[in-house]
Amino acid sequence: MSNVSYTFSNRGSSLPLKLLYVSKSKYDRDWHSTMHMHPFTELFYVVSGEGLFLIEDKSFTVKQDDLVIVNANILHTESSKDSNPMEYIVLGIDGMSLIGEE
Image (cartoon, rainbow, N blue to C red; front, side, top):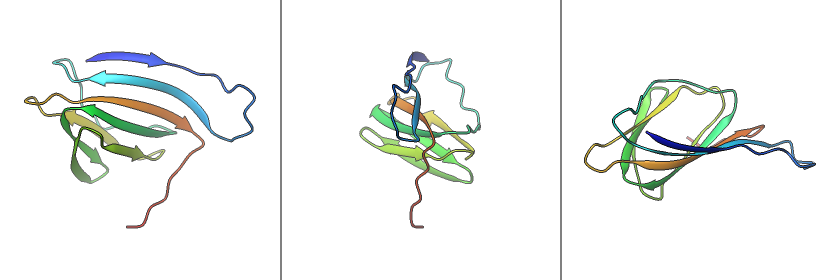
């Protein structure tokens, strides 16, 4: 897996949000797909390829230009299709949670 990570500081913003990191990942042979959770929200943007997201007990496929939002403290993992390796950008954001209709 190739990764590039960036961290940011909150430059006096009055918003209760904090951008913790931006990371870019691309599937490679050392990709480890392990269920995990964070105390912050992650936004995944699929740059290219195809993959699978498992969020708690639901799984779904993703492809280029899909956006996946995983709220804080939600068990999740992502994996790639070998035939069309997935590349994504992920943002870690503290203080944000999105609520959708089921």
